[in-house]
Image (cartoon, one colour):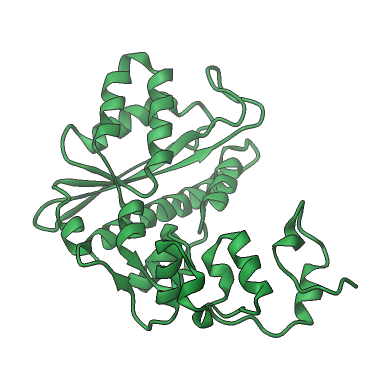
Length: 286
């Protein structure tokens, strides 16, 4: 057996099948380990220096502002926020359109005009919030097995209208899908590309202004949400993440899937995507 503790080397160049065996012989990991810093070189340095608990790492060993905030959050019982956080969120105009896509990528293209591994959107959820706090919800889901490209674009343009910010979490993903739709649908290109200019990304706002120890160094929406709105958990959903949504979509469009099962999958997919945009509403209101 190797005379060395477990670490990132156990995953390079691929995960070692004995990782859990070796880890079981080591002391229980601290609740907030140095791995929360999510920088392998720094983690290895701290581990080599004898640090495993992030709360015990001296500040002088952390150089970046991000790492200092993650460590400070680990030592705090409450979230660390900037003085500008509320002001930045309140500055987002109305009506607000909270938008989230679900996509599927085929190795062998299923539809003409698409390429291998292209992320094709087949579903969206859009919560529309007025200045008085009133919420509307619009959604789209195509389980026909036919190309959803044109009908998705039409439904999207109708849902978000022509004014008001479009709020997303990780703009690069939604913006990338909209650009691809614009390339595939020249007649709708101008209207689709205009949506990108309206996008407001909540992710960098939270990354800059908010940190909680229970996020464990991650600013994914599923890491941030429980620290602010634990009642909006994904644990009670039959489809609880993007991978499960893709699996549900593939099952739903299969010719062998019964109508009853397809309707069940539709309900589960709609509930999951709606939870994502409702989560953004809650995070924008904080």
